[in-house]
Length: 329
Ligand SMILES: NC(=O)c1ccc[n+]([C@@H]2O[C@H](COP(=O)([O-])OP(=O)(O)OC[C@H]3O[C@@H](n4cnc5c(N)ncnc54)[C@H](OP(=O)(O)O)[C@@H]3O)[C@@H](O)[C@H]2O)c1
Image 1 (cartoon, rainbow, N blue to C red):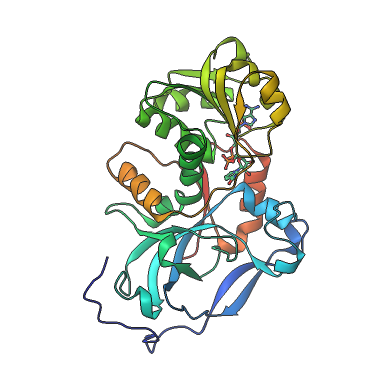
Image 2 (cartoon, rainbow, N blue to C red; image 1 turned 180 degrees about the vertical axis):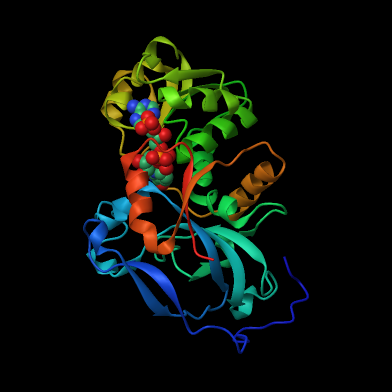
């Protein structure tokens, strides 16, 4: 991004708006608690930028946060703006960000949970954002950060997946799962993945070695001696997964704390509960893989911001074969 930047902190264009819409939860509850409010534009400090958001993806964390089921956002954090990832253009920036960006640069980002992404204007830290690769539209770019980085961090940082290893990915056709199966293939792993009957072809298109229909097949009879189980489902699926691991193999969950005693009983390991974190370097690598066609991004539905309730409902009902995105511009 920019080095010869003509704009400095506080050089907000005369025409810049003073406020923008944001999807706010004033309290925890059902979809009815959500409000689209007009909020004053935040002012970026130091290494922060203000992004004009064009699109922001919908993730299960949105409805979990709204319901009060996402511990990092408690009563003390309310009112809160929902959303964790976005794509947009640089509006303004703080003094220490000027060497990185210029007004109008297209960027995408996964932001920390002290802010919300489903808003017209969002403060993003320079370390959270990355330039959108050439040729990627805003809706596609917005679908990437949280889901793809969860897949990356689960497989590689927590699961230590290596080329030649065998991985079983549960929920391989969902938002995180689609990135996980493609990233595991790119790494050179042998990939087994579970999904419903309608998504078997999709999994094969993404290059999985064995697509498993969780409604008609017993995955534990098909995937054996796996090095890593990447569990995006939990419950009975988790309980039946321990026996698929080779001795010393590891289970990584995105959903809940695995039972360490259960892991020990099976002679395997379980990664402690973790939350995906912003990491611009990882986002850059993922963006390159999308740009060169190694990783495909599947956006199945878009909604305008004022239909966020319908978007969350579609996400919560399940059977999502890809990503749902809110469009703001
Ligand atoms: N720890 C973190 O930082 C983190 C980050 C991101 C996500 N997560 C969590 O990870 C989970 C997955 O997220 P996501 O965005 O991928 O959700 P998603 O888009 O809703 O995907 C879930 C997928 O699982 C499929 N599925 C449901 N039951 C299944 C089963 N028994 N076996 C195999 N597949 C099944 C669903 O399709 P069908 O219903 O058609 O089968 C759907 O395609 C959520 O609980 C989310 O909150 C955690």
